[in-house]
Structures are given as structure tokens and as C-alpha cells.
Length: 217
Image (cartoon, rainbow, N blue to C red; front, top):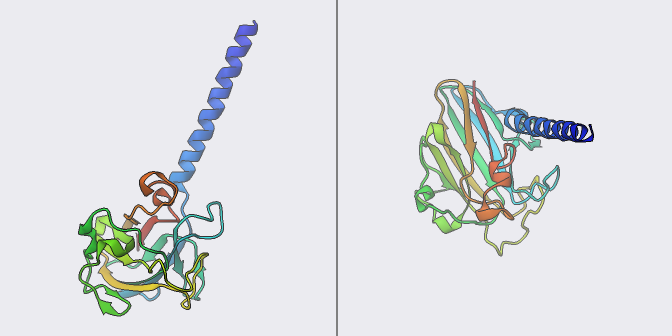
């Protein structure tokens, strides 16, 4: 009798644990940050983003992250970006983090753009891979853009988001073209997750930090 009770208790415990794991996995896969729409409408829209070394708030305040700027000028901690279909999208990224470096120099050259990439107003055909801090890449659209980091010895570096234009940063601007409607994953391919094995894991694998969704409508 006692043995049967123990087995039943173990079975219930395993079932509860499995249920909690399932809920966690489903929440991770389904829950998304709120979508933030691009400024302007088809045929030309604009997005303004920033990358920061640590978000400074929320459940993971020390994680590296992207933010997006709303039409009212407010910075939002979200990586779900809504843009019009069959349009040009000009993206301006204010990059406040220091360099991590690219594992593959191939990604030092921007890919899939309509026109040139500029860094601080100057056209850059290929970025020195050692200077890269992050990338903005939408694999399904063939888009990949390296983001130059600020020097390690730069003055007035930003430590907590949102960062301001008065703090050390580089400004990366580029334009790409959207096609049909759909939802496309985008992410950073620089292993920038400090404290995780080989720089992967954590913010590198989490929507709302270094990857998100491009919602084409």
C-alpha cells in the first residue's frame, strides 16, 4: 500500500514537472513583444533602432539588446517590427555597444541592400570584421548588415538603455526592399552574449533582445 502511494506521488510529481516545462516552452515560442510599426507608409517606410550593451531593466537587466523608436519618439524594448509589403525600408541603427568581432569575415560586407550602407554618414563597402559589434540580418530576405562598435576607450559610453545621442555611438543607415506579406525572423549573428558559452545563448536566442520578427503587412 505504501509503495503504491509512493509510486502515485512520484507519477504526479513527474506529470506536474512535465506540464510546467511544456508551459514554459510554449510561452517561449508563442509570446512576442508588442509590434512597433515603421514610420511612413508604402512605398517607403523608416525604422530607427538602437543596440545597447545592457538593457538595464526587466528580468535580464545585464543582457545586450535592441530597442525600437516609436513615432512619438519613445524607445520601446521590442524586436517585433512591422513594415509595409513591396516597399523600401530605410533603417537607422544607433549602435552604442563596443566591438565583439565577426567569426566569419564574409559578413563584414552588407548583403541584400537597395543602395549603400553608411556609417556615420560615410559609405562603407566592407567593415573590418574586428570592428563589428552586432549585425542586423533577415536571412529569408537575404539581408545582412554589420554594425560598427564604439571604441573601447570612447568617452561617455552608455551603460543603461535607452541611450541618448550625446553618448558615444556609431550611426549605421541602410535600405532594403520588402516583398510579399509574411513574418520573417531577424537576428544578430555576432556571438555577443557575455557570460554564455562561446557568446551564444541568452539574449542571442531570445526574442525581444538580439532577435525578433519582421512583420510585413
